[in-house]
Image (cartoon, rainbow, N blue to C red):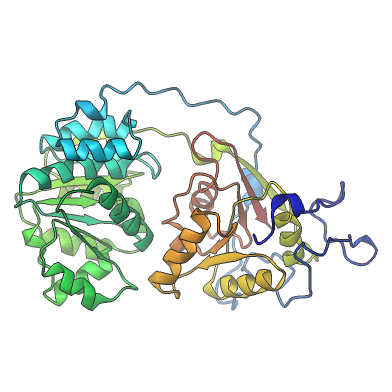
Length: 422
């Protein structure tokens, strides 16, 4: 937000979520964002503000899942079997790991890295936030540093996740000659084609753009010795099954294959069986995101949703807030309305360019803005530990979407807060 927490004025007691119009309207100091009338629907119809009425009324009822976190208990401490200094990797790579402040591996790193260094196929069942990116990057970077013929293809479901993997790669390869190419939609494909001609050791991309590049003969999947499929369940949820199957069919038969997914549904297992050979299975059990999150609802009724949101956002505790909306149009409208009220916001949706989305995410991560608006699809790439609140301004379509949304808060053994407008 554009104002400091100390300058915010708390609403009066007893009316926390009520719109205070007319006699109940409270005074705000001039440096706080001011309310004004807006064109948003004030009713929580379940269709999402600005919806065109093409979808049926949602059946998902978040009130069935409301809960309070009575006592936060730390997860049982994991005792790693290794230190990073124990792994048989190059000194330069060890030095870069040390620069990042890594000392003890996470469970997925501790268990996966030795097998990947041995060249074994691995299937890892692990959520975002468990350190799985480093679990596959560290041994694959070592292989590329010691074998110039090694070439790695990493496939991720979203642009944001692909960018995070690329950024991690850069931090691990400082002082080396290893190069990477990021192949994602929303970015200049000509530049990507030119970069691929230089035969980088690592290619990191999303399925759709990789297929486009292959059709333009800019990339040949048969040339890669190591392949990583990351967050496969999300790729299937997003409709990439045909693209993934097409890529797998063009990979070399002799390859090193790594497969990561938070869940192993029958569909995911079918892809896994076509991709892996005699894999080592590693499962990292993480506590359900909902266990760490206080969940509450606000019944909107005839009140104005923007006014209700405004009264939440000026509270001191709302210091890093992720707000979910159903459509691109409502994201644009809410961003405009909150800006007019004096809030500093960033927003992300599928119609924004990759550069715009990256800038919005960076501004939110670094605290330049305290409010980020997003649709479900782009929010799948958001991995930030210190989000204080998730607000469902529009209802999610399904229970799975709801769990995914609220899982953006309550991370790293912190208690998160989730609020849903109904």
